[in-house]
Image 1: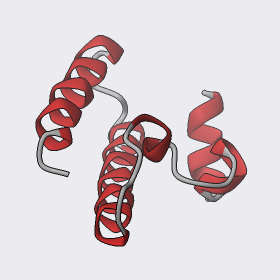
Image 2: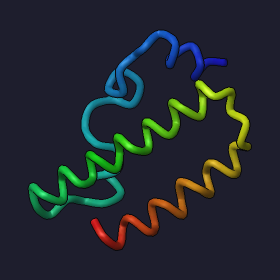
Image 3: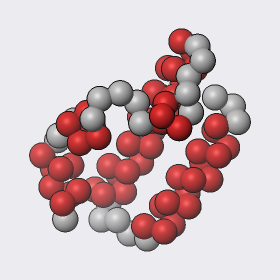
Amino acid sequence: AYVQMLVQADISQSKVFGSGSLLEKIIPSRSVERHYRILALEGAFLTILINWFRDGMKESCEYMAEFCYRTLRLVKKNV
């Protein structure tokens, strides 16, 4: 319910998660190009999360966590 309120309030990511890239704390960028690839990936995950909330969170938290983990592992090799 708390997260749904944040989505409905249209609060920006930086207000919720702080400034800077969350993924760059996990995957440090070594170049400008990699920095922007990581930002694109972070935006994709945020979009997935927001849509999951808006669609009524039909998939379980466990499913979504595993999906994001698998996706991040695949992408991390290519970022």
